[in-house]
Length: 186
Image (cartoon, rainbow, N blue to C red):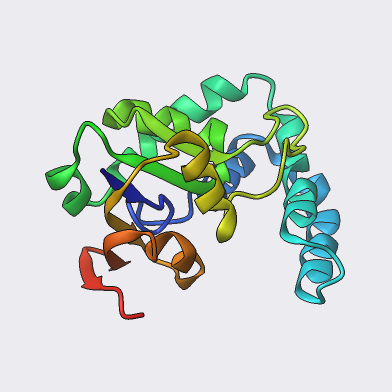
């Protein structure tokens, strides 16, 4: 099986940030959280808060969206075009996507792409609260092993060195830069 990060790997941008900007245009009331979001980001940069706590504050904007499922579907209607061609050309039925983005954002597009195995951060789509921790770094390995205890990764793809723990599990790993794939150098 092949395993993929999602943001800036299969999808050309950061899906969470794009979704935020999309909702900001449609729901200007989202702006009322900007100071809290900025303070949370600063506390994260200063290592006062961890990534999960910072993101929970960022996700306060979700409270302004009445029908989040419809909003996500409409978002992907306009943003699906940013899925990389290289991925569309090589996708397989047993592909696995593991992402730090919220699962409620990722599952929708993965379903459209025919990806049956999509795992991401479990974030309550109404409150922004996590069930667990942000799915990045070594957490991605834990998630992979939880769902595929004996699974072997043929090829792994990511744009980020933070995915090194998962890259080390694969027979081959690739760093993604747009439409360019380069062998991961350990």
